[in-house]
View: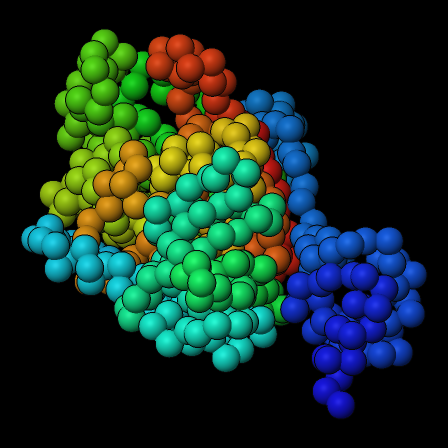
Amino acid sequence: MDLRKVIVEELLKHEILVEPEVVEYIIENGGVDYLPSFLSKYGNSAFVSLSSISPSRVEIVDEIKTEEQKERSPAEKGPFTRPEAYEHDWDFKILIDPGYTQSSGKVDDFRSLFLDRYKRLSKYVRRNFLMRGATDIANISGGEVRIIGLVDDLRTTSRGSLSFYLEDPTGKVKCIYQGENFLLNDEVIGVVGTYREDGNFVYVKEIVRPGVRKPQKNRRIEDPIGAVIISDVHIGSKMFLRKNWEKFIAWLKSGRDGAETVKYLIIGGDLVDGIGIYPNQEEELEIIDIYKQYEALANYLADLPDYIKVIMIPGNHDLVRNTEPQPPLPHDIQSLFNGNAEFLSNPSVFSLHGYTFLIYHGATINDLVELIPGASYENIAPIMSHILEMRHLGPSYGGKVPIAPLPRDFMAIDLVPDVFITGHVHAFTYSNYKGVHMINASCWQAQTKYQKMMNFNPVPGKATLINFHTDEVKILSF
């Protein structure tokens, strides 16, 4: 008998549901012989995730001080030595980048976009054991059915049930669901249920999302290097936190107190404050020429050690279209920066020394915070974990963020990242979900008039440092 099946059946006897990765964890630790020990630890749990068994270690550093602020004696400082990161080569690869894509915006382009979304995400739904034997909607008949499609015309009935249509390339069918799960229009799901021919609808018992599997277990590397992650610099704004930013730059230049491991600086969009982004913005600008805003940023980054590679994507304040995916910064802007800078699209996927990064500025968070039950700007982690489970950065079409109808849906998540980065909302969140480091990166701008009106208090001046050698995370405050 299959060992995995034996373990799952034994767990079900004890009314414990687990992620598939937990089964692999049990096998790696002794299989059936390890089960008694596992049950003694988690026997009272209804659901066990891998992150609850072996969460990543996270260290929070309240404040980073530069060498000048520490008032060390020359003897305490010691002789200058090259930082560890200096001794190692870059290993940067672009995996998915939409680039300078365009669309005519015709009806066929929208059809192509959603058809591509269905094809990409349905294969992840289909691999779930609950979806074995899934059939096209056009072929369903009375009795139990398993079908996969896009959610459409989602409503809540007077009795509190969810009513929606599920559509695939062969047809569509009405579905009724009385469970506790929530749904979004346009997401790709699988359903297990009973087809009622008398009413021409499916009574849904189970909803299956594409989901994510835990990334490879051993992603640590030999070299003691890593990356530091920030977002939303907003240079050019009167609320730009210059002192905090310059303290951060000074720390990177110092090559000490953790900076010696920094080989990469990753910036998740809104590099500058821009021009004309919102009404009367000019009243809150210190630099009113957008090119000079980018020049100011380029000057700061040019002062960094030349062994640090800077990786940047645009955001909604940058000099690119608002429609997503957003292309990299224009070439004339890129020319302001030195050769250590890499300019990617929003969103993009890249790798550093085998670590896979999914970086997205995060504008669709404004939609999802209203659509996902219990979500809030104060804690973005639940939104990010749901994005991973839906494997889509903006599943519900037609919200606040315009999406370009391209032949490929670049908002679909094809590769499960080791690190998932967002920004945009000026909050800060670190969490670990199924082994994925999830970071809603901090900003470098104080509260704006608009944020004050909305009673939102930003969390600025934080940076997340990931060490590729230990897979540990440090949260630094400046």
